[in-house]
Image (cartoon, rainbow, N blue to C red; front, side, top):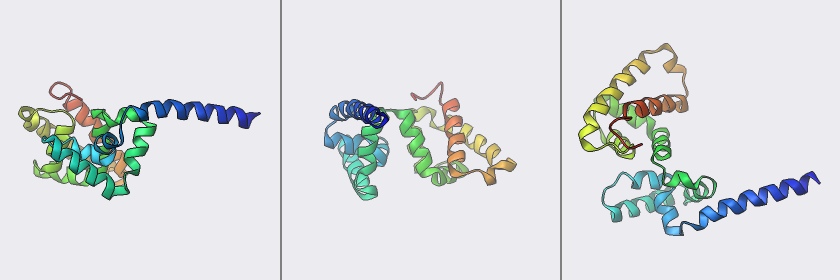
Length: 167
């Protein structure tokens, strides 16, 4: 009886997920979801963005992440906050290096994903750079996992971007 109840519950969850999955066609899944969706969101030219998103999703994992994120968390495919978090986690070492330099393509991409307009990039970047310096100087930084470091940066960016970005 318990197995039957579990099967019914699982089927109902899957049916709810498939409703969301049917809202997006296959092309949209490969351009809006997964790592490709994160990268494509940073490119202004929509045609180039779509091509880069598809190439990234196919190259990275044959689109498995894009498809699974569409099925399990379809709202993450269009959500800037979720894209920002995923982008930070995936590219943390590069963002950290860009923040140390005070500029770079990963930092610019992060600010674009966060919905910061070009006018606010310098101010937000300077604040994040100061935050990174404080984080790195803390004794606990060296023992933190990459996830923990990314989580701290996400929180700092959310605070810094509150007034000038659209996340």
